[in-house]
Image (cartoon, rainbow, N blue to C red; front, top):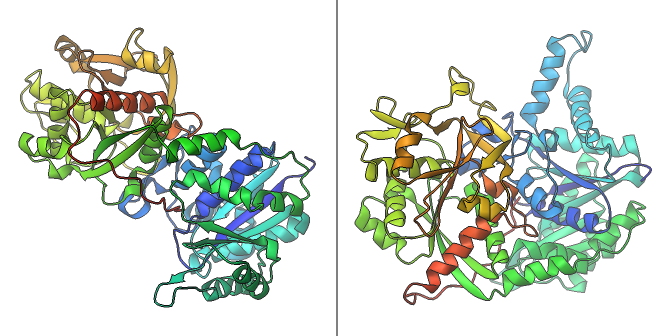
Length: 553
């Protein structure tokens, strides 16, 4: 392409309408047309990145190959367009202001008064342009809701950006809500009208409206929205509730969204081939069998805290032609082995994900012990691996006063300890072991068989590691360190050879799983859960169909 095209996605009325999913879905459709697409997220909060934010507030921290701690929407982007993103794909207000203030202190503004316009807006526009090289289309999602004071600099910046690069090279898509009022059994367009009016007062006229709705929009309603919002009738697109978010690209394509975008941006492309994507969606909607998996974690009150875990389990189900029904269980509910038996017996596998802090750790120990002793397939990720080490050292190796130095600094046997490179670090943001690192797998191990490889690259986010002082005693009692850093200094993966499926990894494999390329560890884990289900008595309770997926972002 002679020049890069830019698509901006904004949202109105309420948050969590699904801007991220809409942007990712459009990215997929454009990629299927042969275009090279990238997506970025502008977040209006003043934090430099989400790395120090509570998962209860922000959801999971998504980590890129180059070690950026980013918004969970970048996970959607990567899963849909099947491309790895980087530091430049997530920009917060905090990062923008930090950059501007740093430049001012270096004297780069030559003594000028530093203001929102032009300095902040110019910095935002520079962040957009950084993605242009080697891309046909850059999709930029503006976080927050139109009308929020925090979003104003970003909206002003993209208004200016259209003037800078030309109308023929930019497109504005506005995601809005058309609520259904049950008392009168009516869909109401007024919130959408007000949202668009708010955007127009800023100086942005949307080209396309994507309307979230529980019920289909009639032609009459679409014409009404088009008339009052000053858009073409064919540019009012509905985004209904769906059973899986992976349906959304198909729904948008059926309404010609990608075709309209290409027409308005003067992009000459091939027609998209969505047959493989459709087959994948059909596997999710019509699985041949079902499996129930318990996820025992610290932040289960907000499922978005483990968004990539949930998606990776769905992908593992796709690989096995199975529907995966996940039950989120707070780890502090596990008080002893009797409770663990009550909570875990109905399930076909246990997954313990990552987290920080001591809360709920002893409950994880109880859950993992029950899974180990009762041959329940187990998958431990990051903290999950560390707690599996603690449990094994206590209950199998019989080491007294065993713990992690993170939770009990004065314990006698700290089988998990602070990494040497983390000693003395005081700043919290962006200082962990972050991003992609290589891992060498033990030949013949279960994990090497799962990957069908002897060396892999996976993404990390941690400060603590398995203490090398205890590797020999763990091995003596049957635990295999099946994955190590290339220099052999860090334990990356563990397994129990005499267990049907007991694997832990220090990294986060969920971050690299894709619906069209399920991660081999999740595919293997779901397969083990299915095998366990076949070999156990009939379930007392039938599997329930998956609820409608609410596209958030």
